[in-house]
Every structure is written in structure tokens, then in C-alpha cells.
Length: 223
Image (cartoon, rainbow, N blue to C red; front, side, top):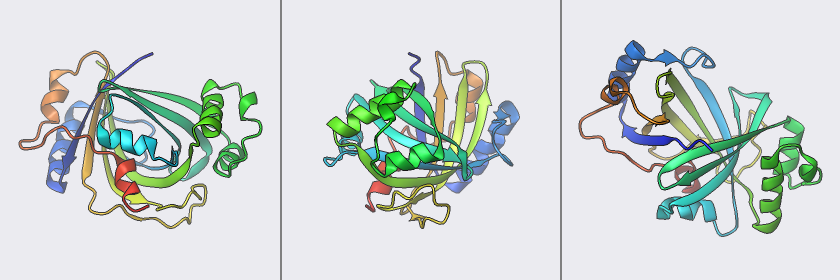
């Protein structure tokens, strides 16, 4: 299991312009991005006690959250993902879903999940049955990604964060969303064993500190 380090910083627009210029000089754009960015739509799961939300807000050292995600409005490639955190280090598990499978899960039609060849889908089935996990809210945002191969470093800017409130109709491109309050621009830096000094220097901005900002938590303020 490969756990990765992660930093998050809250930025303003001037920070974004400055750091973006530095990163373009030393990092590669993500080849999957279109014009340097892509749109992300996620649907997060939680139970009736808001376990995932509360553990995030309380800073619990060992926690996990499930989501279904696709990019640029393309529902031909959807992934079920589980993000896990242990003592500040993170890892992600993923399994592909068809649009029909995703819609069935969102609608609570769980038949067939136990027959999936993917352990993650079977795990979600068990947690939906035993822990009451259910879809909670849509989270939309724009991401600008950069990669640096030494250290397997990935740096992203996330902004224009929007919430679907309590809507779970995430396969509908016309599903209404609203801005998630005065959400900042989020810089995320992820790496494996070491963070090269050239990247460490490029992302530094005076007065900015590491934050535990959660897009899911920000969007749950509204529903």
C-alpha cells in the first residue's frame, strides 16, 4: 500500500498567478488536462451521523471517505474511489464504474455489487448495508494539474468550488450547483518518499501555511 505525503495551502488569486508561473518553468502539465485544466465532479458518501465529515473536522488520524468521480462531463469513464488517511499520510483506492452501475448505486439499488470483480465495490456494498453510507452531496471544481517525475510529485490548483447542496443527480450535466461560499483557491502538493527542493521552493508563498481544507466539508456547510 503506497501512502503519500500531502500539503494543502489556501491561496488568493495573486498567489495563483505567481506560483503557476514558477511551476510552468519546472514541471510538466498533466497530459490528461485540456488547455491545462479539467473539470471534476464528485459525489461524496457519508452516513446519517456524518461520520466522514465529523472525522475530518475533528482531525481523526485514521479516516476514510468514499466518492464517485468523473472528469470534464465524460460519464463514459467513472471511478469509485476511497481515500484513506493515516497519521497525515494518504492513499487512494479506485475501481471503474459504468454510468448504469453508478446510477444504480446512487439510487440505492445494490443488487450485483457483491458480484463485482473489484474489491472496492464489494466494500462499498458492505458499508452501505452495515454502516448506512449514502450519497450526500455533489462537489464540482476546476483543477489545474502539474507533474514532476522525480519523487512522483503532483501539484494542483483547485478553484471555483461548487456544491450541489443535497442533490445526488450527479450524472445530470444540468444538475444545478451553487458556489460553495467564499471558498479559497487550494494548492495541493503530493509526493512519495521525498519532495525535491526545486518544487518545495516553487510552491512557497510568504504568509501561507499548511491547511486541512476539505472541499467536501466546505460543500456540506450548505446541505
